Length: 217
Image (cartoon, rainbow, N blue to C red; front, side, top):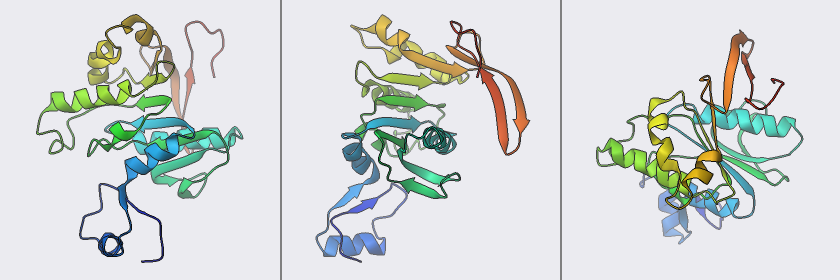
């Protein structure tokens, strides 16, 4: 193992991995991916994307949008960001965009300014003692890591997310937090409903319109 200050591992890496073993033997600290991200987010405007499905794709999309806008973001993704040709990149801008992993509940380490939740299904149930309610509460706890001025972006096309919306707020700020929850989906009850969906290589296109806005984009 090359000289290093620390060894960062994801939940997919087993404890008997040769590099982890070598790090322990060399007394190099071994830290979890989410702990590293949490430390980096302390110095950036963090955007964390969670959900059972679509978080890797959404992280890549958000990273590409911010890069195209000239904001030079830092991003850490579980999959390839095709526009950049890499999984992770250190930018000089103020934004850090990261895929948040719920498989081992390590996303609770993160304290982002913006939290995106795409959907919630019964997955990785060994982490949650086979209790779906435990998994749902963990997502709520993740959203509660937001500061009072933060933003939650939740897709209310997902039935579980619709069920959890009343629990996103805190007991003393329910109305305020409900108002700051930007819900992105195709339903008319959403803050940003999407319409005119159509395929366009190399992906899909849609119009998004806020009820208070006269123009779509």
